[in-house]
Image 1: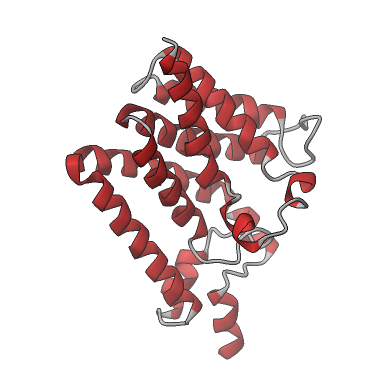
Image 2: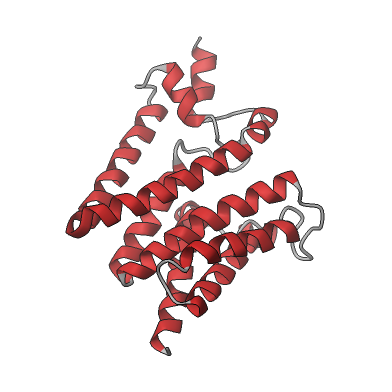
Length: 223
């Protein structure tokens, strides 16, 4: 029992299980992004406190999993869609997404925040799912990412962004976000991350909302 519990604490899923759940994990990622957009829109002036509360909640749950303070079945459920080669902190994906959203909320106008969340939720999810399911042509600079995934990600990120920003902003933000997503996991980039704190925040869920938001903000200044 002790050995089984330790595996669940670190979300150390075997490769076959992780691959099987990858598409499911991306749809959960998509649903989470949509839910967060609706929540912060409904929260109005309380949006920032809500984001900070959610961030604290998920950090607390993550620590509880690490310390083995949650029921084994619940810990296993929460870790189900983890990636064994990339995730050693439970719920790191949603924690990084909330960090990126919170900083975006502090830095950019509200409509750009919504668009940046849509880009990371729709673009990242669809790009990964399409790449896993039908991707055949690798990007010239990546052994993991595919042309099909990147193109579908740009389209998927662009369309919902139109609900919040101009077409030019949506296109630049979507293309920039998906380009960042395609290069962030490159081995040559990972080798530069020598500091633990830098490695922790060098995450697409954290960086895409900030990078896409910055691009859309700059474009908006010139429109």
